[in-house]
Length: 48
Image (cartoon, rainbow, N blue to C red; front, top):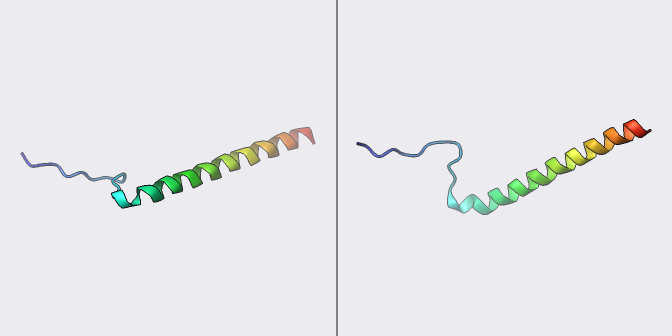
């Protein structure tokens, strides 16, 4: 039986792990900031 080679979009090289963690944090902060600003805008619209 032939050995199966792993294929897929989630395959990563070990040298980019630090960059991936940094990018994940930046994206998380951006999404949380957008949600907070959106919720603040909705609350301000309801109150004003």
